[in-house]
Amino acid sequence: MTTETLATTEPTTRPGKRPLVIKHRRRRPRVLAHVGLILVAVVMLYPLLWMVTSSLRPNDEIFTSPGLLIDTFDLSHYPDGWNALSKPFGSYLLNSALVVLGSVVGNLVSCSMAAYAFARLQFRAKTVAFAAMLLTIMLPVHVLIIPQYVMFAQLGWINTYLPLIVPKLLATDAFFVFLMVQFVRGIPRELDEAARIDGAGHARIFLQVILPLMVPALATTTIFTFIWTWNDFFSQLIFVTDPDLYTVPVALRQFIDAQSQSDFGALFAMSVVSLIPVFLVFLFGQRFLLRGIATTGGK
Amino acid sequence: MSAIGELRTLRRDGRGGLTADQKQALAKERRRDSKAAAVFLAPWLLGLVGITIGPMIASLYLAFTDYNLLQDPNFTGLENIQRMLGDERLGRSLVATLTYVVVSVPIQLAVALGLALLLDRGIRGLALYRSVLYLPSLLGASVAIAVLWRLVFGGEGLVNAFLGLFGIQGPAWVAEPDTALGTLIVLHVWTFGAPMVIFLAGLRQIPRQYYDAASTDGANKWQQLRKITLPLLSPIIFFNLVLGLIGSFQSFTQAFIVSNGSGGPADSTLFFSLYLYQEGFAGFRMGYASALAWLLLIIIGAFTALNFWASKYWVFYDD
Image 1 (cartoon, each protein chain N blue to C red):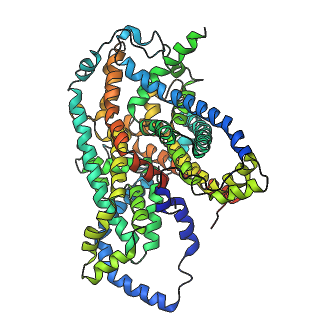
Image 2: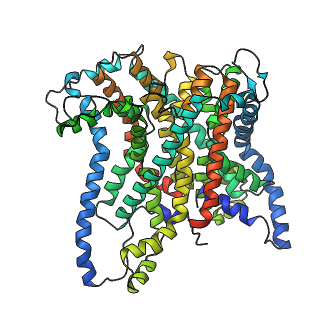
Image 3: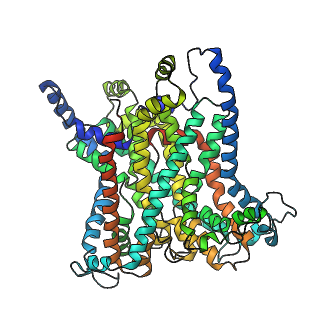
């Protein structure tokens, strides 16, 4: 499957005329399909909508009815939740943003460089290296986490964000290397050749020809890195244990423990807050998300 | 082509069919490129050695030691493996993990495929449906959604409030050993959007002429699905299956949050990765945890190999 054909996200209409009889028969299933789809969509979204409305209700009304209509608006959960932990929630958002920023920059730089080599350069043991890269996509993190922890602990990196960011600078998210290799392969080689005739070396071809053309792949990488890093709980739980440095997922987990179990509204409110960035990225970056996931099959 | 497809062709192609001229040209280009490659691949290579292969070797060694992070690792031979054989929690963890994987992955893929087929028929509002159905798969891995699930399936949660409308008194789903794992399976199925989008892309690759020809020959929709759609989509089904299995074997966040880190009730949600976390980072038995990690790698490897072997019998490659 090629990148270009998959990149079309709009449905292709079916050519060829069909006999009228068939058209008639197709009507009813269409309506049924819509009914089914709407039903599925409502069931899928209901828990999310319930979370949002629950964050806006007084605590004693949250669990009394499954409906979404709010009798009394209560915005107090948001300031309550914001200040419920040792630091205001904003500081955890900032910490997460820092980790995300480092991870995005790391992935963009290191993965695009590796992808250029794999897609455009000939070198010894390329097949082996490429196969190794593909295999690491499927390697479970758990096999590595303990020695990594030992290593980072010896480097004095526990309770810094370095264990979360440095691996990205070293292209360990091989998934994105693969995504970019796929994309670069789709860029016509004639462009490289033309630049080479003009005297450009690999550095210039990479920076001035390939990189500008692979912006869509870079956008996809940015968006996926953002969402996966923002949601990542496992490694943040392990490497960040100082409450002052907590990122959003770890702070939210602390919330369940710290919160007197009755203030569910505040818990809902901060859960909503923690999902807003992902939702916004989804809203504005959908095109790249769908394209990326279709090109490489997602993770 | 997917990562799996790439691996297939790499294995098959080798460097066989090149002429002498092509080989010479290749060698020349290779000399010119290899310097550049060393630079471009430097970060990746450093990561492969320092963050991936190095730790893998270290973890293999640690698997045969007793190590608590404070003292040096103490080589104990096969003791960790012996301990595994008698470890009842490990047994319950394997049951929970395998049940979760074997039940949730096929259901999720079936739902994803069903909806992709519905959406593929050039339906009105496709983009909107697709977005709505895709959204949960982006949020599903977050702590917030796990928290939400705890409350939706709690004793007084959303689900029981609904059941209450019909006079049914539901259990506290997340607190009952019989149902807690089920709530996590539901959560996994809820994130079917990602494989669905992959299926949609695959469906679009199937040439329309095939269907036109089939319907001219009088094949009905069901026959078309079985004889055209499913065979041509089988590489993508396979891809989703392999990645789905590998991914769900490693599930952690949801079980951790729903059970508050315990894997309870009665170890019913003690996913393998959660047990590994408890042993390694709560109990500081790093040696044993490393042995567990390798067991996980072996299990995932075996499942994947089995999958590749079985694929010969049902996956249809057009090329």
